[in-house]
Length: 475
Image (cartoon, rainbow, N blue to C red; front, side):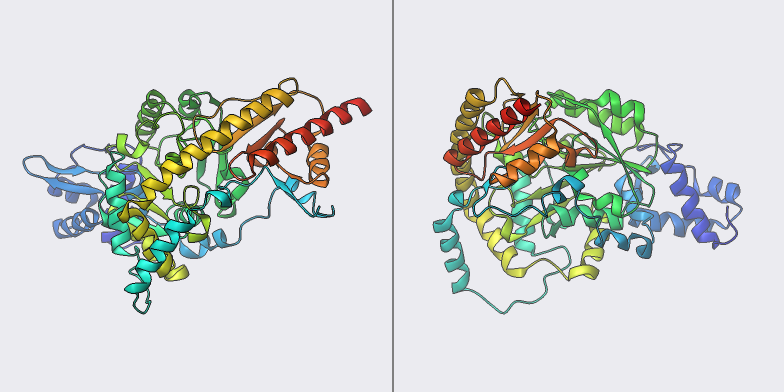
């Protein structure tokens, strides 16, 4: 053990290293206090103090008749050994957007844009009447706003807890942190739990490639191949090294940008590998409630029994991004750590937004709204697929999304996608080229049918077809 640390710290680090290395797996009994004292050449009182601290951190627990056992070895371990704050502050200065999005900066913007790139619901779907009712209800009992407690407005956390129970996750309000959207959740995790040089495994393509949140904090992204059931577990098994220096980030429901839905069998396979490799998991589930054909499989978190999954939810994709309300659900010790960092960065999410969100969830308005959203998206999906079949079937391939509002359009012609992107912009069509989701060349476009009207979507696709055909004729 290092002589630069106190004996108490040496004991703590020794036990944590045994857990993180897998020498002491989850559920195993750790050596007795006497044996540890002999092995580490310290007083038994030092061992007792270290064990009590580790129990508080959630790494170990005393079980009647079994002694002291390892309780958790992933997120809780990371929360117990947080990165240095100064080294993590770079998360607040993300890298600039990928080059394909910047190539249009010098192009004069048309007066009207057909938005086929926006990852949000149309303003036509916004529930104006219900929102007015919610605001009027709150206005009648409004009191002066103050700072909420670090984890967020308790009635909102209780409402989210009740909501998640319907998904099969028994998450208490104390295990939930309110954040200003899913992106802030990822920033807090990056700053508060992950060490510089960590590897983040993720689907390729993935939304995370366009954010640069983890790269800005000094972490490495390692893409994994997908099929129609989602991320391929065998690829993760081959790539992942044991230990908490790596994590898995995944969007299992109506994946951004491909729109794919991970099957329940695939989810269980993935969790089995993460257990073998001791990989913590971030489940980004913000599209979950946008199912169109049938409800999606259980969440990864509900299938997990070891506190391995941090769950991220949000109202941005289902209600409105303007509320800036999302949440992280996970082990109490981890949420406590993230709440402390959030307190130091913004003193909490908007009190008004939290009051509004709590009213939506507890009043039943939210579930009523979701039913309306699904019906509207079904109409838009049907129209979008009809348009693509009519105008793009000879030029591209795509899969039918079971939910969400994204289609991954795979271009079959040889038109340079950078050229197509610029020409589409000049023609008044906003697109997201696939390269921003992979950091490499890929012949695909992410289309959204959730924002533009049905008529505008058709107009945009007709114009896109013309651009592709004209470019091929020039060649």
